Image 1: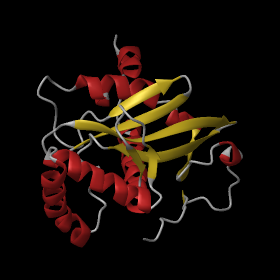
Image 2: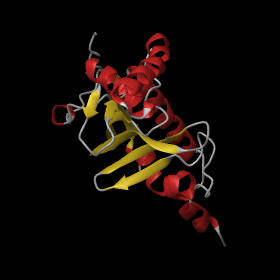
Image 3: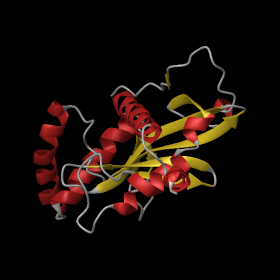
Length: 206
């Protein structure tokens, strides 16, 4: 089985992202004006924080973000079709004068709805039957056998980032998933730039 090759999604190839050597797990780098980035610290908690969703969750695309202050960064809690959220992408911010460098990655754990999304259809379709047969032979739940097959697949591709007893396994994202994270961040920045922040609204009040 071919291992997944390392990659870096970078739309600013002529810019030197100086912190890259310190963060070898980085899959994506982005560059934003500092004045645009810092708006997120107020925008996300007011309008798009994951904890603003109602008790029954939210639609995909709604209330999916978390602002981090130490270290400064952001998390994307992507929602599936049922509205259930799971951690999908994260990025750390490094300030450089009037710019902010973002160092991001996608990491998905096996409790996420998106865990098996990237397994090719042919392989994915064969796994439930394989799991059924293995479960009978080993006298164990079919679901456990299926998750073993998923883990083995990602391990063979060199995509597993965490596999410890008692903890959900984690895999790194594919280039398509990282590009999805990049596009979601761009859209978030665009929405933040076009929305009045609570502090701005208060300043306009008589």
